[in-house]
Amino acid sequence: MAAPTTALRPPAVATVAPAARRPIFVLNSLDDSISVIDPVSYTELRRIPTGKEPHHLYLTPDEKSLLVANALSDSLTFVDPVTAQVQRVLTGIVDPYQLRFSPDMKWFVTAANRLDHIDIYRWVPQDSAAPLKLAKRIPAPKTPSHITIDSRSTVAYVSLQDSSELIAIDLATQQPRWKIPVGKLPADVYLAPDDKRLFVGLTGDRFVEVWDVAGAQPRLIQRIETGEAAHAFRAMGDRRHLFVSNRVANTISQIDMQTLKVVKTLPGGNGPDCMDLLADGRTLLVSSRWARKMSVVDLQTQQIVRQVPVGRSPHGVWTLDHAPR
Image (cartoon, rainbow, N blue to C red):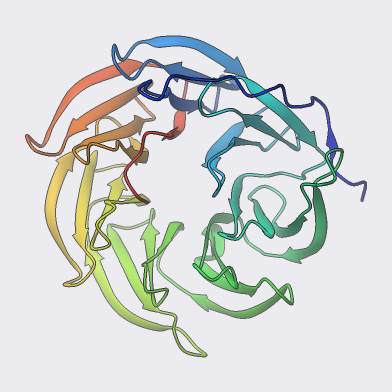
């Protein structure tokens, strides 16, 4: 396979006043674009074209780039999270439906949802022409969906949506450690800060499964009932609470990761999916996919306080002015 190439070189980084609030980004999967939203007026400023069928956004661990995975274009679009300018486009990344850097930024992992494999790349930033080097392609039937990586950058956990399984991959050896059956249609996965408890959203059900992954083999701890089509996660930033969007129920559940219970249920708009939490700790941003809007939820009043029209099938939502993840 040819190495990824750079289609556009990064421009010089613009300077921004320290007090400036950085934009909010919403990915429009069916419009092949990103909506850039003003964080004060909550209006759409403009749209950035991406490749075909972009499905997920991801802020790099160093927070210097916002990455868009363009599944049908086999490419990644890098966007400056401060200026909202395209930094570069990397081609030759095959079917990147979901994406994650390891925290140490040595490894980059993609889930090829359409082509049933997981790719592990080495990140070599000094090679500006081809900074991603494919280390291993791992068959992953069927339909690899979401990825999380432990804080030590040693293990990647990936949900296999259509086989209702979960796979763990050792990043150093690029070999699977184990693969287990889980509940119906697993989607997003979230690893607690202790690296021991893995939360799995079951989009084909109304539960979040919690697995102990500290040992050689995982062990199911609990099934938490949240709402129909439990799907995507966002940590509250206090190392204790976790949000999950229930796409069919049109709700968001707040889970206490210590008691493993739902402690609050919030409105999510129509088809809530991905979420981000602003640095104020009370403003939750939600991509309401079926409404073609970004919903803004006030955690104190537990109400949707505004909705911003965006493109078709809004998916990922991110901002640099975020609470801890």
